[in-house]
Image (cartoon, rainbow, N blue to C red):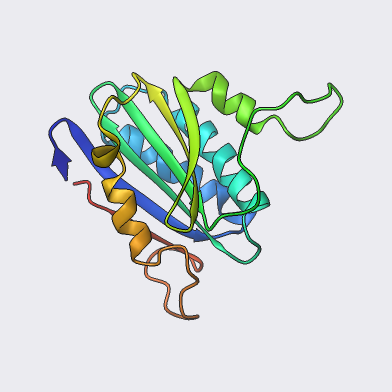
Length: 175
């Protein structure tokens, strides 16, 4: 669906399992490339990978993670949601020898801006690549409200996966 100069949204829901990170990276890279979005697909893949990994590591155990996008003529917004782990994502100082803790710094380095908030029982972390999105919040987040209201982050009935590999399903309003 194209609304004005928007393309999307598209979203992918997976089990909160680090083994799905590659599928999520490949999915966002493909969406960016397929729709001719003017951002670097590798930067988009890096950003979604870091946000997805944080959701898996810090979200509720056994939960689900939603990765989504909206694209426009100047950039892309990537969104990752889990069902709400403790705390709020934030940049922090990481000792030089630490092996983890640099994910949000990487996101910060390749994006125009990023942020987080809670919505309908979900922790939402988002980032804009390219030209930042300038739209009223009601417009920018309407699709996410609708998707989350369907229970997208609740576990599906075993054996009823809807698309792709077991444990993940993709949906898109984009054509």
